[in-house]
Amino acid sequence: MVLQIIILVIGLTLLIKGADWLVDGASYLAESLGVSPLFIGLTVVAFGTSAPELAVSLSATLKGSGSIAISNVIGSNIANIGLVIGFTAMLVPLGIQRSTVRKELPFNILLSFAVMAMLLRGNHYGLDRYDGFILLIFLIIFFEYAFVMAKKDRSEKKKAGTVLTETDTDELKKMRIKNTFLFILGLVMVVVGSNFTVNSASEIALALGVSEAFIGLSMIALGTSLPELVTSLSAVFKKNADIALGNIIGSNIFNICLILGTTSIVSPISVEVAHYWLDILVMSLLAVGLFVFTLKKSKVTRTEGIVFFSTYIAYIVYISFRG
Image 1 (cartoon, rainbow, N blue to C red):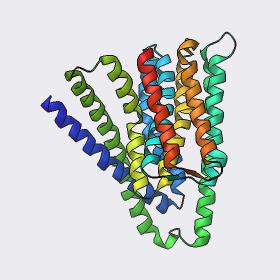
Image 2 (cartoon, helix red, strand yellow; image 1 turned 180 degrees about the vertical axis):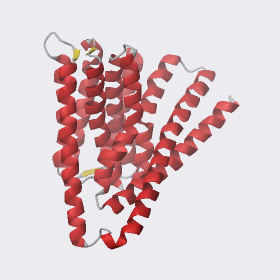
Image 3 (cartoon, helix red, strand yellow; image 1 turned 60 degrees about the horizontal axis):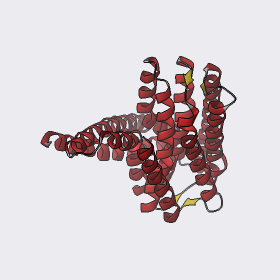
Image 4 (cartoon, helix red, strand yellow; image 1 turned 120 degrees about the horizontal axis):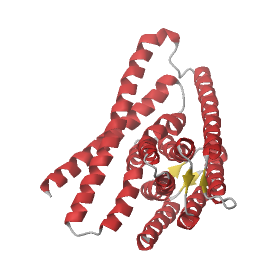
């Protein structure tokens, strides 16, 4: 028990400090590249925080348990909006750019319902290789959009004179090297810290007599979204909400396109529709809810954060009883 408490403290320390460095590195990297923090959040940070889910899903697929990939993605996307955005907005209302409301959020909704259609169509329940290729095409479209956005950001910053010029080459290189290292180190610390925290917390809960079933449901859900949660909280408290929201929306897009696309190409996935239809619906409705709440005012308020967080808690309670 003492050892697990020590590991828990180490894990939390790595998480908090790693998220701090991750956000700082991402923010300064965006500045040195002349792109917006939103772009960095949507792409680099989102991919980094989604990497553990990708590794788990690919490993499960190669072992013949492809349906774990679907559970992993659905659960993670639900937690990203319900838990991460909900809890963060309860603490600090989240501002969101109009471009995100008009483009990235609708794209996330489109992907959610596309996966629902793929999984539930006709007599076929699951994802085949054709579905996987379609999802990867969606990912390519997203990357194309993101890089067009990055070019636009850089062009606007050049006109405003806020991008380092060629005469600043040495300073530019030093900034990029330093901040890339800071970003990677922070990301590694977040991933390792989340593993230490979840594993040690599970051991402590078992020692205290908490049921394995509840631990599995709650700790796995926490584990898949802990990197996003800590990173988003750190970004918000550093007054960089673009990285926080970009991280969540980008992570959801990567989860669907990259993880489900790749795993279904490696091995077609078959599932029992009765086990997933409500979960997929909750995932899709949370994405729609985020869009509706931010459509007019471009902000997630504390009240809306409570709605998201309460929905997530209700969902966790439901699946705990469902088993």
